[in-house]
Length: 120
Image (cartoon, rainbow, N blue to C red; front, side, top):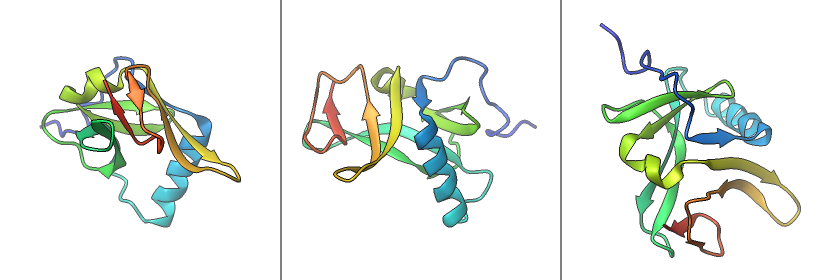
């Protein structure tokens, strides 16, 4: 019987991860001892100052998820979230004024000042 992890789709992933994001995610995985069967969950949830907040963290695939391979990282995305993140780029910025993950989302009609919430 095929497990959810074995159902990695060959379709193009709806999100991209920059080299900086991949490097940081691999460091987090190692530092936090995240099990190998966990994938990177990318998605949205209601809330935030602009309507939606981004979800980014390690998790096991669920029944309504699609699994993609993006730059060597397995990414899970709830099928219902795809319309909100299609074409989104996840980056990691490590500058003097800003440090953290950033989301460049072409579907966002507006974003908040913190960059972690948006409206579509």
